Length: 316
Ligand code: ACK
Image 1 (cartoon, helix red, strand yellow):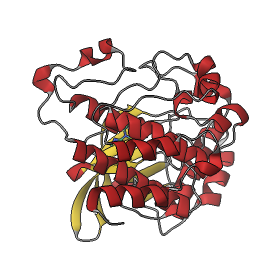
Image 2: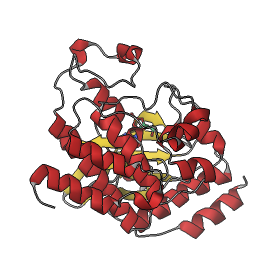
Image 3: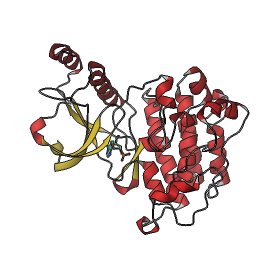
């Protein structure tokens, strides 16, 4: 892309309110590679009133990024601004669009993604439900397990994710890729949904592509998303059912014995994953309700929050 094209695109997204001075940002190490770019840890000076320095995460594109990739990052920025703030989503602090690479400055989640966290906090000897491949546990050694999580902790994770999703839906934002890998854990074990502003590659390729750990995103997709590419609040609720199942199994892999191409028939025939050993019956009923084949039978996130709160606190 020419400099001129890029600067035209950037200026169409420019917003002085949100711009942060590059000199007040000290870049740190690479946290990871996302689907479209890089995420770095950084220190930002005076980004929050009353706090001199703040650890942040910075999202940016590759040096040789295409115009589309730059525009996608700017669209993500626009969605994050539109959505606003909530404790259970990754919040935007600011951005750098002028005088260099486009950068999004967001909250830093010190414990990384929820799936990996759950796996290393899994109690030793935890009995996993039928659909879990045993060799997966090999990466974690007993001495790495410092403190384990209780069922109550797991239920609080489910409630926090449902609250964040209820908020996103109230702002007309559909996630399309809700999974434990897309929930980050910040200080005090606060769950924060990430990548909700990401422009999705809705071609079959992305969803059928195996990830490095062998997972295929189709396993989080509702039948209508899988078959008709129909994404809605109801397909997000379906993904939440799979995510809640991941949480209750301390990061288990959904349907390990079902090949991606067989999944639609498997679900249409009414087959679903079994109840995780430690999952209370009332909670599994909520999960089952969220993976109803018919979209209109699935609850809203508001209803899921109420049901979880009623179970946890006896009130909603
Ligand atoms: O799964 P991870 O350890 O957590 O690897 C990915 C990677 O960057 C690419 O997305 C990590 N990451 C993304 N956003 C943040 C953030 N706000 N705070 C901490 N880590 C992040 C993510």
